[in-house]
Length: 460
Image 1 (tube, one colour):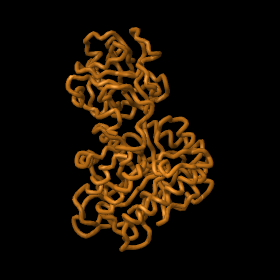
Image 2 (tube, helix red, strand yellow):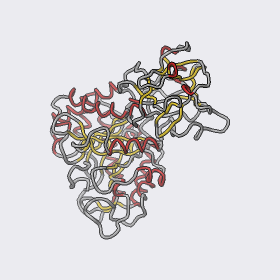
Image 3 (tube, one colour):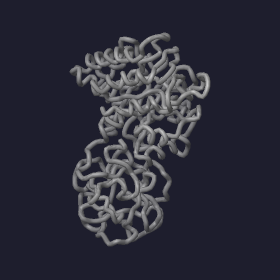
Image 4 (cartoon, one colour):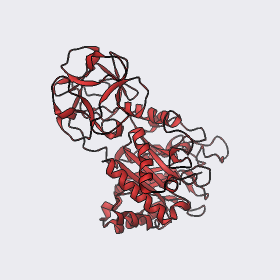
């Protein structure tokens, strides 16, 4: 379970679903808006110039007309009255993409497939060179690989693009933990189709023994099962929030001996997937160390400065009356604003307790801690708070039922919490027999995905 097993846990985006062109657009209207991609950046026409041959690049989303693209029913992507075009109708890897007069050629036709934009003339994918998310990064065509720098989100309606990634609310707020390390992990698209949930918190990014991030400290960031999961979720119109830490394993926050090095490790993961949110799951004795706490706070300040608009969640343990306030106070004193301080309200100590009631009591304590640390109003503090429950039988033999989740959902809705999640989607299934020890089911009476289906009703 979350605290006892080795290596464990401690929308569509606003732009909409990717599919074939025209599949999600309203009748009679070609959708217009931002095309977002690697690093949360927008596809941009350099210097807002409409001259033939102008570079198409990545740039901070800024709401200008240079970033408003129309997804036309003829397969073209249009901005400033012209079309996204492969230079000289080239087909080789590395051929640059430009703006050019619309001419009906295959070099200007694109098909959305699995989150990628495939050029009809070459069969290759729209790709951020490098890969890099730096402002001014040229777009090119390259062999389709499903990598983060080839994943794009198209607009589904009229309007100008947002200036930031989606806020910490709505579909992004509900992101059940999904763990690929053991236990017959479920297919995320099965859960998405059954419940309407769009985001998952993917666990866990750890140290490989040095200041180098890997899944569970041993699986590579790209090319493995975790990359495949991310691609699958994004292709279905959702996204992921990688979680750093958990209860067991080597922590980057310890292995990286400076805030700068730790920020660099976080950035490797952010850049590998073009992330819009991360979760720092602070558990175990390592995080009672004041030096490690401050290193984490300072690293997250750097991450937020270098990735404008990224959502940063911090997940911490709690007692029945709320969490220890040390880390929250340290962050506030250091000028770190967290999108959601999220508590894990379980393992309070034994069976027979009403976990819905205990959860809301602990969440009120969290609200007070955040309010006092940051000088927020009650409403502001709630909107920077979150709950990460555990579905079914907990490590301390407590029982969290679907009815408890409905209680927690009502509390979140009335207070507009920033985050509502749980450990884990792997457990959100009935047990075929007696409750096992491998954490593949909840141990309570339920239908598959009942817990997820309950929290998926949350609208922020």
